[in-house]
Each structure stands twice: as structure tokens, then as C-alpha cells.
Image (cartoon, rainbow over all chains, first blue to last red; front, side):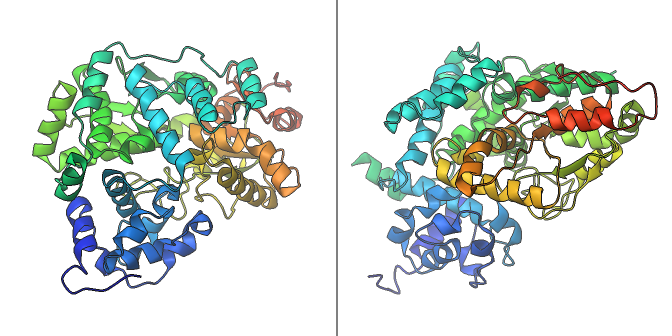
Length: 195
Length: 301
């Protein structure tokens, strides 16, 4: 159960504000974000509930939620928020905190897809669409998923089996090696990662 | 001749080949040139910015820096996701000199912030007089539902040239081609393309909603300007039909393909044979319509 405590009640809010510049305490629960969200129905915590939980330091519920991974970043909520909170940006920040703190993903297919996508870009500098689909389908143990679609795409000449490659691949590798998760410093996660 | 830098992104060299083909075809007729950014890399799309802020910025800024190095002042990015990432990166480094320095260090080259990022529909809109003059076969009688999806309507910092809730750029273009632009409910609803592979169940549901709304409005086809929207609405259409126990049979046609058709170009040269849901009905309707200039000629598929 969520215990409210005067000392820590603003911790989550303050972390979000420091990392994204967005102040979730401006939310007054109108519910417009949830009403317009195309995937609110699939989420375990709705977007307006995420805002409320973030206000009262319900960080575990939020960081372990499927919501942050199901957010499509379509920005409908951010566009409509009467309090002018960039909710999509808050979701983006919560995803990064969740990964940094080692929360298991409740949506392994989605997080796995992002990992494979980036692995392809790290390797070639560009996305290899075919390799990504095959690796993803193998990872979720459905190797024949979309096979008919793949045949159709091949016959229409829409799949480049070798994919494009960047010439300066050393530089791409460096970019991946040197980039940090947060532009602004996030000591809580750095400590945990060091453990 | 005006020449733009061109950032095709990964999909225009693969599953969205016909977007690439038709943009180049239509630009030639408008007297506009395109030159690919030298040794461009992937923009990182949503996977990068959900993982690391610096990675997302560094991948995007390297592309901009490559263009700047070659003296390209404006680059055209036809993929709505690439466009959004590149323009956002520009906004972020413009406000923070320290960040620009840090990113320049990661990518191993300088970026001064002097490259403008524009979407292909913006360029068409800007050249609307030339575009109208280039029409030789108006798309008379064709009813088009223009679909903008998420990233061609939002966020305001990126799409500062159209309305977030009721964008009209594509509708205006379609009208100038002689087709009828339909008012409909789902022009800015997200299609869930980023879940097309990982959470197909969600993507298929969203696709079905959009196709159903276009059908209800009486559309012959849906016009799109994003390779992810096209792929999702086209390739997941049969799954959406099975899910909703109905038939949509709605061709998902790039705005650049519609422009090419109105400019009298061959359907195959525009890649209209490359879609999963064929455009035959649309082409038949066009060849049956009376053509004001020149003789009546069927369009080959």
C-alpha cells in the first residue's frame, strides 16, 4: 500500500522535473489524456493515474507499470493537456528511470523489440528491416509469424535482404559506446547500476 | 533549379521504396532536385529516445552535421518519424550550447545548427502553384481520406505549419489534384505502427478503427505521407478485416503517388504495384473519368 510521507512525497515529482523539466504537480485530473489515448484501454494504470501517482511518490507502481511501455509517444495527451504538461515526455523519462533502476519489463515483446532495433543500428548504422523481424519472431518463439507477408514483400521487391550500411561504422559504434542514458545527471540510478 | 538535401531514412530504401520512387518522380516535374545526405545513418526512431537521450540526439545530429558539412541548408525527410526526430534534435541543440558541444564530441564532428529540416508535404504545399500547373490528369471523382497520424500533426514544436487537431495540408494538396478531400473522424488518430511487430494485436485494432472510419466517410483510398503509417495500414489490413469480420479493401496511397498520377505518370513508375492492397479500382475509376486535356487513356498498372 502506498504510504504518504511528508519527507518523501515529492521525490518522484522532483526527479521527473529535474530530468524532463515537466512539473506533474500541475495536473488537476481532468482526464483528457486518458480519454484521447489510443491505448489507455490496454494499460494497467491510465495516463491520468500515472500523473497522480507521480505527484504522491507512487514511483514503484508507475515504474513497474505496463503503461510506460504501451505509450506510443503519439503526443495526443501532450497536445490536449490544459495544464500544458508534456505527458509523452514524462512517459519517456519514466521509461528511462525504470530501465536504470532495473525494473523488469511487463511488456517484454516491446522492450525486446527496441533492443533488437538498436542492435541492428549499432551493427550497420542503419536498420535492417528483415533481420529485425526475423530476430524478433525467433525471440518470441513464433518463427513463422508474418511469413506470408514476408513472401509478398519479397515478391514486390520491397525487402532488401542485405540492408543498407553506413561506411563510417566505427563512428556509429563510438556513438553507442559514449552516449549516456540521461543528459542530466540521475544519481539514484548511477548508484544502483554501480552495485 | 532548387536542390534540397534528402534524408530517405531506412524504410525508403526498403519497405517504402515506392514513397522514394514517387517523391523523386513528382519532384522532377516540379523542377525540384534532391541530393542524398552523404553516408547517412539511422535516426534511431523511438527505440533510441526511449533508451538514451544522448544516443537519440547523437544519431540525429550526426545526420544534420553530415548535411551541414556538404553545404546543404535544408534537408527533406519524408518519413514522419525521421522528420520528427531530426527537427526535435535541432530544437534541443539550438537552446543549449553545452549540449551541442557534448554531442559534437560524441559524433566526432561539429554541428553549428544551420540545417533546416522539412517534411515533403511542406515542400509540396510551398510549391502549390507549380504543383497545380503540373497537373495534366486531374483525379476527378476520387474520394480521398487524408490520414496524418501522430507525427505529421504533433507536437507543435515540430509541426508548426499545420493544425494539431485538424491538419489540412494533405487535404489542400488532394483538392488541388482534382480529387475530393473527405472530412472524417480519424485523420490524427495514431495507427500504432511502432507495435506492428511487437504488439500486433493492438496495432491491428487501431488499424481497423481507422480503416472503418475512412470507409464510413465513403473513401476510395487513404492518402498518407509516412512510411510507417502506410506499412501498418496496408500490411495489417487483412488482419484487421479478419478481426472485425468485414472487408475494407482500401488502398493506402502515398500523397506523392497521387501527385504523380495527376501529373500523368505511369502507375508502375510510381510504385503503385508495390502495395499489399492493390490500387486497381482507383486506377480504373481514374481512367473511366473524362479527361479535360488530351485523349482518354487507360492507366497501366
